[in-house]
Amino acid sequence: MELTYSKGNIANVLYYISFSIYIGYQFLISTTIEFNNTSSLKLIIYLLCASLILFKLIFFDKLTVPLIIYGTFFVIITIVASYVAKNNLYILAMFMIGAYNVPIRGIIRIYVIEMTVLLLTAGLLSYKGIIPNYTYLRGLKTRNSFGTKYPTDFAAHVFYVLLGYMYLIKGRANFFIFSIYMILGYIVLELTDARLDAVLIFAIGVIFYLYNLLDEEYINSLIDKIYLAPLLGAIIANTITYYYNSSSILVTLDKLLSGRLYYGNMAFNEYPIRLFGNYIEQHGWGGTGRLDMLFKYFFIDSSFVNSLLSFGIVFTVYLIILLTISLKKADIEYKRIFLLCFLCVTMSSMIDQHFLELFYNPFILIGFSIFNKKEKLND
Image 1 (cartoon, rainbow, N blue to C red):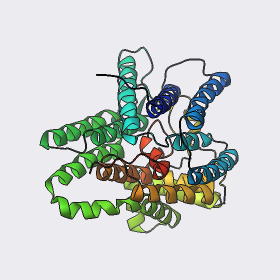
Image 2: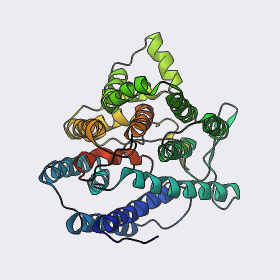
Image 3: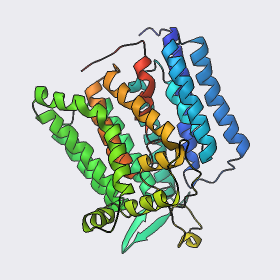
């Protein structure tokens, strides 16, 4: 096989390297591995990733006027939201714009391979006692974090890796694949007691198994409407959380969601909805030294609620519109499979906080693909 070194291939490689470095670093600092994570190291990692992406955009990409206009506006509002919320959200903008003309399938392949290796390594090291395996109790149930800082973090990684793998196999979930996903979901449930993530893993298997069973012409017309998923997911999550009260239906739902509605509603009562968000100090259960937080726990689990309150109306609305349009109009490999995957991402993001975190969710990088010049549609 002859290797080709076209500008497009080099551009893709530059992005893959930057993406790999970033998600690897972010995963490392989210584990129980002890190392000297200085501000200088963080700055070096961010500058290296940014330099590779800027080099790609400037010297290898033929940027279009619409991309420059909409991308610049996205960068500005993201920087402002980052400043207000005291968050590194601007990194997301850098990678979303940098993904211009990079095949989303290639990005997800890199993600699945790298995160699988990292998860297995962290799990093995914690099992051997080389790094701590934080354990938590819920009733009589022991919850393992397997080298991450909290059981739901490990389970969420498994969910996104399995979702990425499903996209890579083009959604071909026969009964064997379906059974594997059911078994893996059960294992996650037993070892981490991350109930919602386990249900989401079950959902991946069920959704794609049914996709392969149902009449293609009928089901495709429904799948084509999934581009509305992030819009509807954001509206539903924020509406239910904002209007949460003591009604029996909502209280029951809140119990099923492990108190997510209660704390989300508390956030709406404590913080106003602003154009560019708020700085919200949140305390979860993960890590060590959390006994002092026993009466200070406060965390917004829903990505859509957190985005609206922390990063504001402008950023949240712009991002949702951008994703909705891209999901509808972008020509990408195996688009209908990708849409089903994004439906799963949306369901997760309504209850979990990882929608804007690239080392969990690479699917969000679809955002600027509507401007891609390369057209590849294999459905």
